[in-house]
Image (cartoon, rainbow over all chains, first blue to last red; front, side, top):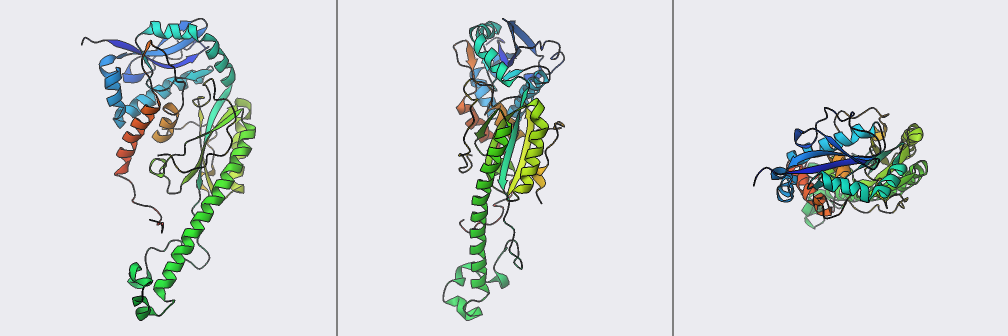
Length: 290
Length: 71
């Protein structure tokens, strides 16, 4: 097919992002344009449908290098706008057939966008990831037994053969007992961490205009050995941002069983949608999603 | 001990961790529906992309981490 183009949509704002975006590099390394209708402006980039059409897009999203480049440029454009004006970030990979579709969208949903922009105005999103701290070893015990002492095979320790080598309650049995204690301690620590994380979430939520829980990142993705117990997002008024930061630091000291990892400030990715502005209860501390 | 407790005082990240970025741009952002659009991210897209992410980091991961007797 001939080279056809679509319009990649980044964000909608009631500011005037034309100048701010001059020279910015959008998806595919292409420049960023604006489409303005009825007091709203959309940031867009023309993209080749050979790469960004529905089928190729689906394939490209499975390619991590491609996905990362697109995600970083998408975020880059949104962040530039967010520095100057209220912004509604649009979900990655939203492609229109052309600017007319985007213009139609702006005028059809003008009121929704305006309301949403009003809600996020002068506020930023903060992420707070909470992990269960690894349980500390009891005094006099090694932090983690790396193997049975003296090379006693684990499988034989509980059997009759174990007594022959070390006597009952020997090294092998002691090893097993210690391991069992460690597992219990880890489980207790995790439960305590979940409770602490919920308390932290409640406290931080009181400083925020809105709060919600995202699915915890799996250990594989988070890069942390400890399990993530809570993945929270908060919409924080600019004038309360430093208070929020101080509160997070203080809470980390009060709850040593939880490792707190803040991210942000972010454009309001989690809070610009129409129906997401309610406080989510601190309940979703279930296992990691992925 | 609590190494993660520092809050970056709005000093901006040189490079945001990819997993946090994808958490936002795929898991957040406004989803718009309508016939004029050509394609859009949906729940499906999150799955697709996380699969790409997991398979790419999977090979370089430390196996297991702290031992868990349940395994």
